[in-house]
Length: 140
Image (tube, rainbow, N blue to C red; front, side, top):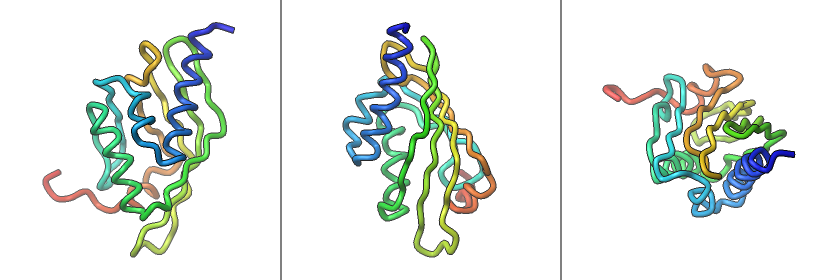
């Protein structure tokens, strides 16, 4: 098997394993300094997060808002020598939100020099995701 393919799949698995342990520093280390995360939708957490700190800040904020109930389960990682895709399910609850979130996700990533350089989240039901995270603040 191509070593780049194996390495790209490994960096994605390691990234998600670090998130699962709550080790945001290890997760940060899997990102390029100029990493960009694109989060679609119309909810409070949508937009582009540019740079390691912003991407990890997105994750930390989601964990804080859900009071630590956010869990990620990776079902499969697909990779080639430039891209990787994590097929995952995430669940969470939020105070004041009656319906818990359970969402299937395709996390598409560009991998450069063994690190995640850019990524896009694609949710099974974006309307459900937007409703769970709440409305985007006016003017944002």
